Length: 586
Image 1 (cartoon, rainbow, N blue to C red):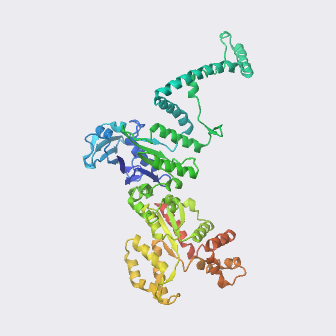
Image 2 (cartoon, rainbow, N blue to C red; image 1 turned 120 degrees about the vertical axis):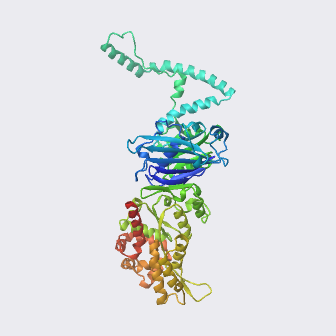
Image 3 (spheres, rainbow, N blue to C red; image 1 turned 180 degrees about the horizontal axis):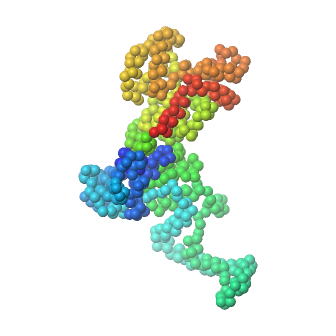
């Protein structure tokens, strides 16, 4: 079986949302967007560690941005065929093997007294009230918080791990262990006898007894000793600490990253994540598993959680390395608009997966940081990426603070990236060259760059009356001219269409990045950089080695870019900033 979807209405920052889940689901999104709230909704119904008091509704559980006194949570399960679940929830599961478990919270308008009801049934229409969460023995969730106490958990869980290992021993192993147990006990008694004879231990013992005798006569017959107590084998074994060995040398484990790995390994061992269970169906939920791990270990952990663990797993993460290892169909991107949190494409979706098919392989072909962005600025190549990242700093546009990513499509094509970003409900802006190409087998040329943007408009936007009118009157003039330099009628039509395309956040160069820069207010800086070259040669020199030129020029002349603040070349970057500022107003 699988928890296939969650429906939330009036719950915390979810006004009305449906979130589809997969066998392995990765929930991503900005801080405070509602990832933990989503998990809490599941935990209210499935987490065995929560008491009846814990699941009582709080004022903070009701939708905060409109007056409401009810909220609903529905967990939709499909493929419910496990005998343990079917027998426990007999009569609640439909003929199509579907099950819904629901929580409804209520708040009295006058007294503000809060109550709740639990329901179960095969469909929303056939839900019947149930008394309690009696099903949790066979249908439950096990949860690791992002605020995990690494040291205390490890010290606590090692004893449980020892006990389980004891119970699983073969008879021959038990006999061997008992023999060794008595050997250790006799040796520990010998140690107990020897330790008090150490000079500094003996001296310290005498000192404390002398001081005690000065304080009271009541206990002069009673002598204080430093008790080693190592001869108690059980206490001795329980006091062992987890350490690391390197080249047979014992090394204390101190790094939180390594402790986090041990934490997850112990947790997995206790909960038998890698085994199928016939006694219960358990969903495993882990918040921010990447804590304290460096990128390579984050990717390895993601691979382990994604491929090795059996059963349904739900993760939340802020890590691009974790995201890059997950199937596109397994992504749940939460976003907030006007105070309301929703899931892009309703969560795990073939829409997102289909967008990635054009890449042919995993997510890492597109920088995974993009999935955590609010706006992605798409550019053609490396030189544009270098230029706009440097320009943003000179214009005091803090890309990280504003959560903007600049991504180059590098020949893959804008449309492929746009499909993905639209599927994840991430805003985008693009800039492309205003290419003029020769039409094959004809002595004619066309505005290829503008046509590229028109195709994107037609594929990704709804038809607009004004835009359609401009295209009907001017699109034919984008081709058919017999020289690489278009006629006036062609140029005029191209300009009208290009200006209209900016309404769709698509920006065209006047020609290309190098020509635009040379004809801008930093022309003198470029002439100075290309000392010894004729002015007519500079653009071609820039284009010969685009990326290396751009890197070297910006390294020595980045301050000059501040002069481009009002140049058209800065417009797409300023548009990204404007989109973020509009989001902040919502």
